[in-house]
Image (cartoon, rainbow, N blue to C red; front, side):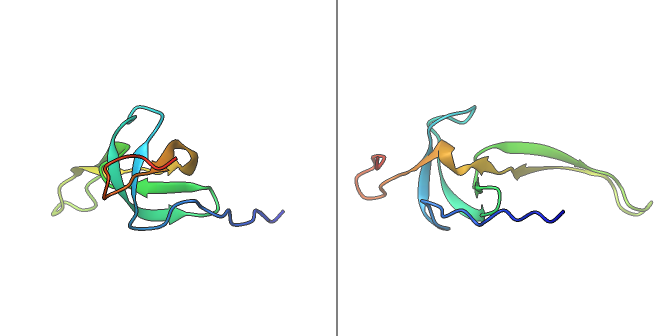
Length: 89
């Protein structure tokens, strides 16, 4: 069967500053870099950082350990005012 999920309207846009209100990164502030509409998730820079181990592809390439920002649900963030330094309810 086909997945007929509709795109959800988001209360935030790319480039806006947001504050995390729940989870392990509660209270942190960051800028939105990507929006995943179908799953209602967003990627915020320097929030929800995970380490990823990359396997070596050939003998010449060495394996790597990198850190990337993983998506969080859009309901866990609130807009942050850049002028007044307060969260907008």
